[in-house]
Length: 418
Image (cartoon, rainbow, N blue to C red; front, side, top):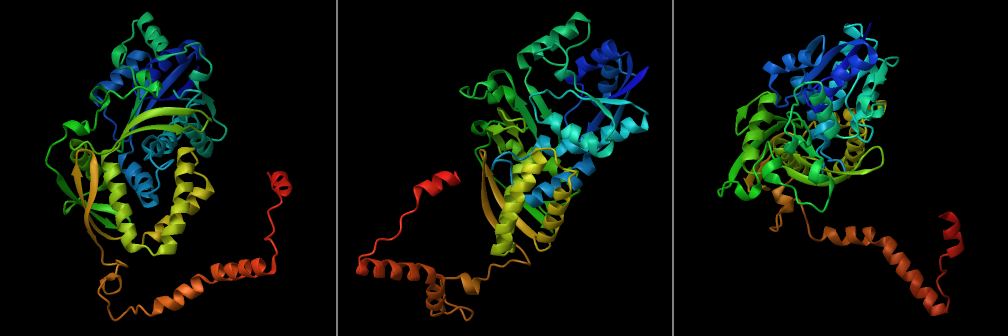
């Protein structure tokens, strides 16, 4: 009999996949669940897995590793995917897949199964990680082979076998959650013309319109780019993010409705809640503006965009990502200090920042002239900075005086180049 390790969450897809695997592969199913801080009834999860037909459930506590090895680099990078998405699902998938593969090898499994659809990003993320740690392992992706076409079909499949359905039909959104965020897709969200039903959707945040009328201030301390304290209280990463999720979620901070470009080429629409992540990313950006010089910050923005793309595409374990993370660590050596933010009805406003490594010098930046800056120096700087502009203007004047027209671009050459 074959032995197959299944990436198990207890949600609709994996609840169907356990009996489907047993029916189609005559196998033992080892359910493996990575705990990355998601909301879960852990006491009943094992019972649900066994009742669905799994031989056993393995739960991997990955919260600390998730924060320190995946979320902290994400904050150091500071660049959301396509300028907006804070990569909550993307960041967790490589770690979950790594743990799944290690468990499969330890259990002697000859295949790994996952519940990712053929339209989604997660199939890429899971399978690239599996290839990185078990390149010869067979991968089974039921959504790419079975006859079920929708979540309604999955519900009918479970009902026909007398198995419990782990959700209400009226709330059958496709969700993924962890310590960093929760995503919502499907149902009415599949039409971009529909306004999200925030009162029905939201799990971590309140809708901004019903958030408290009074603003609340929050202080984040960073050490070398890593958050280390919340409102003056030092915390480990898991506790800090958890506490900040409650605080920011109460004020409706971190809600995003976005149409994004998936790895497989199509567009998809999702609503994301990332309360703590939104605050931490904003605070970190403010501190970098204070501590990084212009050229380092400019180059880092370019590198960070590539970081976001690699993470979104599941390339966490590639050599380029290793090199980028090394650069990010180097760039954060002086990103230490405190940022104060004001939270109010979904908005974040900077209320002050300070750092022992601040490059902001009042004696230079102030409108009051100090000893380190002379206004007279600007004249020479502008003359040199504007020298190319001056040379071009002189050439144009000379050509006009001689009656010679400036050469026009050859449109045929431009067309050939296109």
